Image (tube, rainbow, N blue to C red):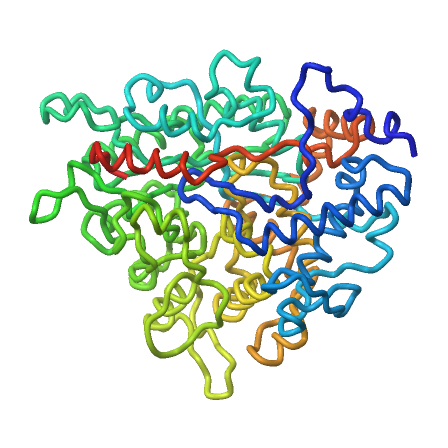
Length: 567
């Protein structure tokens, strides 16, 4: 299998170009989505070393280039096998488990991924299961006024920009543009449809001049008009609907003007917003507490209710609410999902999609918390005592009667649940540990149910989402966790719901019709051509965006804090 035929991109690099990465297909190094910084753990370092060792050994045996091996289905199979064996262990000891995998922690945690032995030593259809994949949390940034008017994001995004062709771009910020978005989401992954979303910032309203606060970081790195234009550009190139846009709303930043924006978006038929996006924990300088300090809000506060009621009146019942992740500068209390049960109960006609599934909620919001986020998903739900993360979201829904715990350990949902857990960043943070991955998915399935979880990746900030897709394709719930914790088996039918069918219902998408259009689109034809010419997994040699060092992230967080920038 000469590499010039199977993976010609290995020979296309010019001598002056940077060397392609030699990394596992699942990134096990430092990374950041811009909202937190994950520093490589000692165990991740050990797993990375073992994956590369096995790849080198197997590639030599098969007569392949190491990068070629890692970019094949065998590379992903080896990576998942090592995670099965070492993902929960503090040592490098291997313990063989079911399906050719292993139980981490010296056999204490059963395997979380299906890895047949032959998948690690021969190219096959190991990863070829097809699903309709709808990603409800994706990011890109444009060349809008934020580049000159925002005092925080331009500096922040310089740390995030790490694309392979950065040296040829007019600006480093173009690493996040529509071309890179289309390439990473639709040419380098199996994603069928995506929802484009934004980050929070103060709006550049003229009133800010009157408030004498022009120094506030105003301007979103992708504002509502920018989301609409990106959608039109991608869909125009694809000749089909591949992107749905949201409308960003900051109710605590001049509520009246925000609602005016909602009405304006719905009055213009070209907007076609599929949902509203809000960050309750983002602090606004125009919404202060008794001490005059910028603060966030609860969805159950008057401004939160006014936002929901305006959205419902305008006929868009989907509300994407950011909860969790210990983001520097965010209001810690309002980042907790304690208000989700009450707001969902108050507005049963609305749908509340909780971004990040609320992981890390209740674990603090200082800079140090973002550098070393406390793991919240490596334990089951408990009925009594303090809870964090997903368990805090579950507790809020139980308290409002959406979920009932039975004496026999089972749960029932006596009324329709209008809350959905979104997997963006959460699955990526959990998938390298069999223990954490099984608890995270198991809790959501047991308590919220298979119809109330939606797929999201937070890409393109972490590069192509394909590694997350491949890992979830091969994820399984061990018999031990099913028996011990009452978690359901993760069937192909359940995966299909989580990958896209649940989101399709929320956004009123016909998945079969959408898939037919996608398969005939220009993007799909381009992907098929590039796949056949260059190989499917060329994304493996593209490093994720984001800070590479603890110092880069720490300097940025301190810079923002010193200037008292909201959010």
